[in-house]
Length: 201
Image (cartoon, rainbow, N blue to C red; front, side):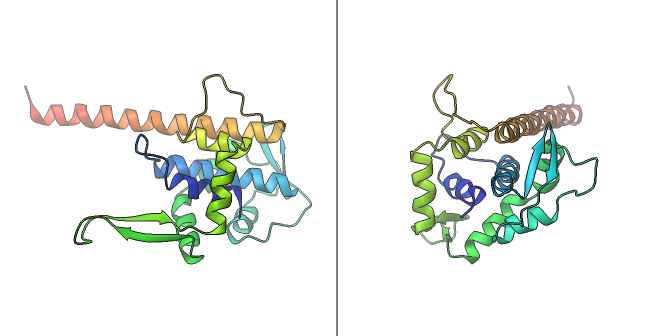
């Protein structure tokens, strides 16, 4: 299992106080993929640029797809641009992949099973591994989960990231999620103003 798949699994049960938005999660998943690719040597980070490495792509369908979509000619892609490009609807791709692997199951709410369909993680070794990483506060997973509002950690807590490339990716994920939230707020304000114009005095 990849960090992105572990992140998706723990995002399935973030607790009643916070539901994870698909856009936020997609950005964090793209960051998790990049961190895993850095870990395998398939890419390196040079400043804010993603530089292809010499190692082959990992034996994981979605990670392999991510590696295949890298920009391989200079000037190389900026981390932030990668997050937005790769992250487009990425949470849906992970949901489909995990469902196909039997890691997720669909459930319907409501007494007559007519309620809205939802997805839950199945109790598998992969889910237990993801939960163990979360409970052990594994630094990379904790930092990415914090970016989307899952178990944000203690105030002032250092996530313990000791790799400059990983730190750069996590910082870019946080910035992208904040930018997405700003876009949402702008749209809410614009929609409210538009509704008021139509409503009249």
